[in-house]
Each structure stands twice: as structure tokens, then as C-alpha cells.
Length: 400
Ligand SMILES: [Zn+2]
Ligand SMILES: [Zn+2]
Image (cartoon, rainbow, N blue to C red; front, side, top):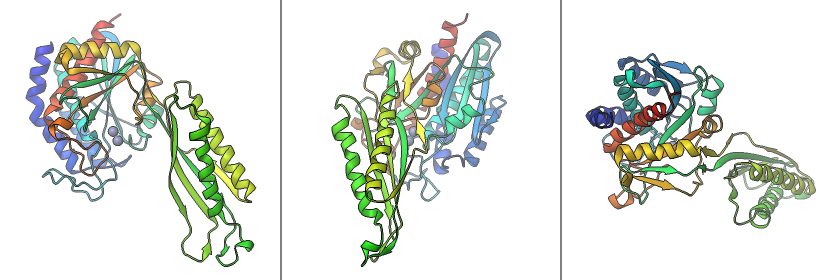
């Protein structure tokens, strides 16, 4: 099966590249993926699938079921970033201010490649493969929305895998990077602090309550948590990245707004709980002492990605079978980045893999989320084969 899968995946390469470049030219963001979803839907229908809408902009399709067995979920995301592209490629974004700078166009194309391979081998699948095409990964809401709309039910997957492309790294083109069990990616949580004082004239601060001086002291006081309260050997970090206040030079504003991000890699969630509690106590305590009303909200949260021991070991052995052990690299260190596949990984034994699509030694030194991010799409076939082989081999090994 392996040789045939690789041969067929390589045959699909020109088509996968066309799909990827078409998506790349027309990036869409968040849940607003009308064109993208339609493109993926039409490709799936052409392959003989009956894709279903799931949530605001997700698609689900299943293949297999001719032989009894378990269910394996494969996930790809489809959304781009609000980022102006500066690559100069002939297939660069034609939508100003939007770019596939995280490679989700590559993911959608690779999973469509897998869909073709799986359809061609449908009678050999020992169970069912569920394909999850999700929106809104970059805002950490798409996977959750699809879960809320039943993507993990009927049938419930027994294991799951996703691939993310990797660029700007030292590992060679086409290598699969597979995390060891435990946490592979940090949690990500937003905080939003409002400091409300009393507006007034800049010449008479004694008649106002200045929220800017209070916010400045809150900002400095919060650094105590990072530098004085968290053990240096535990990973827990947060940063206020956006502050907004005032309109002009002689008016004390009413409100200061502060937005930030919290990242942790604690499977128990205790580190996140501690940071949230202390941000709230310090912001309210310091702001209150300076006569301001402070509110603290945590509007958007994504947990850590949890890698299952058995699924991770299976991924290592299957990918070694497929592409050779020299192209499979284990990764021991958790990434500071986040990934909303985390929500799937908390329900279903999972693994997230990376496929190197641009090594620094080949000149791909810029990482993702950059206006100059570029991806070598000559290895799309490998991602497609990796997705398909992972699902088929896992189902074969776990057929009752
Ligand atoms: Zn991203
Ligand atoms: Zn991404």
C-alpha cells in the first residue's frame, strides 16, 4: 500500500500545487471563508465525497466504513492572516491586507490530497476516516465552533492528527517533526483590562481622576508576577501588547484599555489560573488605590495542545515506514506558539505534526506570520501521503 500511496500522491502534486496557489491568491480570514470553503467543497464533491457544513464555516467529510473499525480524524485549517503580502510571487495574494502567511493554504491542499488517496483506497480502510476542514484557527475559535456543532460526534473519533507546515527552521525540507507525549504547544489566552477614571482638562488634574497614570502603575506592577512570583523553571509568561488611551494633548481621558496575551505549558492549568487570579488582583488593587474602577476580562482562550503517548508513537513509526526514519525527527520541547487543535486534543487522543516546507539552509529563513513568509510547495504530496497513511495504518492496527 505504501509504495502505491506515494506514487499516487506524487501524481497528484501538480493539482495540489494548483489548489494551494489558487487559495494563496485569494486569502480569506476568520470565519469569512466563502470562496475557500466553496473551493474545498467542490474538490471534495469531485472526488466522490458528500461534505457537510459544520458550524459557521467548517466542512466535514467521511470516507471508509466498508470494513468495520474505529474512526480517525484528520484536521486541516483554511484561514489566512490580516497581513499584507510582500513576497512578490506571481501567485501572491490579490486581496490587499490579507495573506496566507501561516501556510493554511498548504494544509487545505494536503488534506484534499489525502482525501483523494483515501477515496482510491476506500475498500481497504479498516473503519472510518473523518476529514475536518476548519476556519478561524488564527483567532482560536474555529475548532471550538466545529466541536460545538458536533464534529467530534457521529462517529466520535478514536484518535486525531493534524499537520502544520514549518519554515525558517534548521531541519531539512520534507522532514516530519513529531512531538513527544505531553504538551507540544502553549496555551494562549487574551486579557482585556479597562481602567476607568474621570476625564478632565489637562491643566486641572486634581479635578479629574487620571486613568493613564493608574494604568502605567498597573502595567509596572503586573511585571512582579513575571519576575517575582513565577518560578523561573516553569513556563508561564504574559505580555501587555496593546494600550489605548486619550485623543489629544490637553484632555485627560476617561478610560485606558490594555490588551495582552498569557502563555503557559501546564497540563493542570494551574499556572494559567494563578496568572489570571494575580492579574485581576493587582490590576484592581493598584487601580482601586488610585481611585479608578478596573475591570478585567479574559475573552478568548485556547488551551495547551496535549500529545497522546500512543498516537505520537504510532505517528513516529508510520511516518518512518512511509518516508524513512531519517526524515522523522522527534521534538522534545514545547512551542511557545499556540494552536486551536488544542480543543480537539483535550477530547480525543491526538498528535500534531509539522512538515518542513522551507529550511533555513535552503534560503527559507523567515518564519510564519511574516509578510515575506514563503513555503516550498513541492512537498505537498508528502503531506497528503502522511495524512492518509497515518489514518489508514492507525485504523489497521486498531481494528477490534
Ligand atoms: Zn498562524
Ligand atoms: Zn497556523
